[in-house]
Length: 490
Image 1 (cartoon, rainbow, N blue to C red):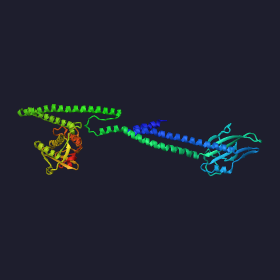
Image 2: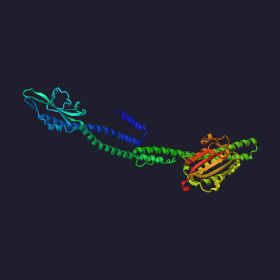
Image 3: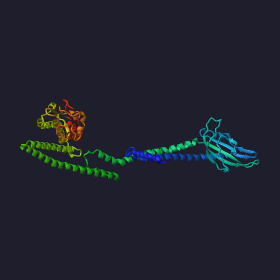
Image 4: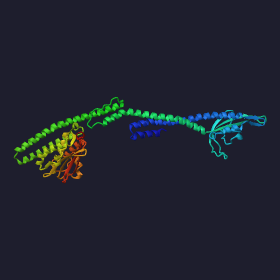
């Protein structure tokens, strides 16, 4: 019979409820069941006590009525004054009915509509029998038949002219008062019990919240952490179960720290092991080209030099991308600086490279006229690398004779940097894909498809966005948005 309750509890566990609510339901459901069972038991107990009180009064009434019936020489003398009868029938809501008869069915006195007692072969004399019944329908009375509690008393009498015979005295009382009394007892019992359950529920709720408070603190500590914060969790005075969970998490964080440290060592070793040989290879090929007179050999040396240059560029970009990863401590090393000044310095540094490529690189005239700073809080080295990649890509792919313009401005609460060219641009369908690693938007040039991926990684680590749009002259416009430094801006 407990299978529906089990299914209900399984539903609570599988329904996505919080642990706090599940515990509360598990504790309150037994209380609810006990409250219902207690109400039912209380009603039965109250009805039993009410029946006992009514039975005592009915027993006294039947004996009192029996004492008013006295045998005589030629019959029975019933000394039952009209005033006593009026008293019995005075309360219409709690009427008392009576009947005197000589079984089987010879009516003597009272109400003929009283229900008959159960059939007994040899009833005991002077011992009242109690039973529930319903008054028989009386066509002369407008009142509907109602349930009653009846006491039946068998007596034996005899006269000089007749043999000994039985006499049945019945007194009945309406069950309305009995049920009202039982309901009153039930209400008077359940009201304080309900208040007690409500108070217990509040105490249980407070206890559950207090018991789960360490879990909430652990959750808050985990949620408030940055992705790069791998320090151990500290949970003092927590239950043993939560301490076990914290230890397991700390072991996981320790393993992650060791992996990050190994990755950083690998990056440092790779920078030393790859940059130095490639730089030496470039230097040797440059020297060999200066002294080479054989045209075929010179062509081969130029291809080697180009491969070495491209490999060095790829290594530098891979190391920059590794430094921009969220696990890198360099991402957290941030300071406030003027983005407009950084754009001026980068543009000036890359002008010689633009001249060699036949590209007109310059700042937007408004950048020179407006001297207001555009403060941001970021890692200057990484943000410099991101803007440098954008300008380098524009120089590399815009084509000879094109123009590249750099702009920096404030826009609401954001710092906006733009690099715009009038080259061939990137088709709109390819603009999302070019932010993926090793995906190039064109087949020309000697890029490796990491420039825009590096830019996106760095900008997103600084809570910014980068997007591609059409340039004013039909080329490509790269827009970078970063939050303004609130302290410096104020």
